[in-house]
Length: 247
Image 1 (tube, rainbow, N blue to C red):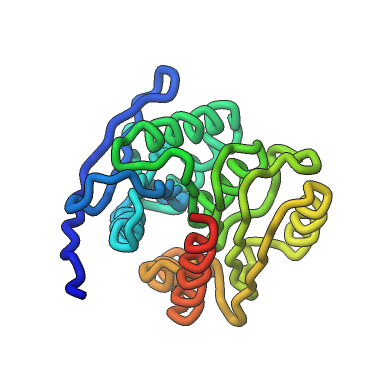
Image 2: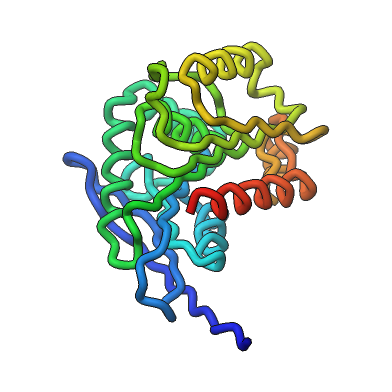
């Protein structure tokens, strides 16, 4: 059978959460009009940059509608770790605003004609990993969430049965930015919540292992970051397998 050619359409999508103007990026196969699963992509602490857009495009190639969301407002991105840290901490320091931005983005995704709103998921990188775990913790109606080298600390302790999503955590075994104690508390929290969770730890992988720019940034800024092709490919495969199951 001849495979239908895909035409990935991508565009900036502006939306709001309360008073805040947000600038997302949506990608999907334009050859089909039928609703399909929608996947939210939450950026690293650097903001919604080319790397995150590439991930949205790759999800579109898998047949999903991908919405890379903006957690900083107006599509802001950071040029240095200091700037990135300040932007990230502004959200983490006010998780009510953060949560409203996550909910607004999910509503926008569900409102797209090319999205089947009964089948949605979220993936996130670094800061974004923490955000998608938060979405699961507060019981958002996502089939699955996947955290890639994300922080595990909690802003909301879920009640038993409160998590609606399957959870996949892809963690670098040598990630020095996520302390062992965080992993222990996370596992305990998930056990109490009776969550369906898979925790994958990639041997030798550092923080940022999915991002090809991580090695250079790590060297430039003296941060324990590095790209790891093996862990990158393995974690993407795990995500695909999970999506095939839940969708």
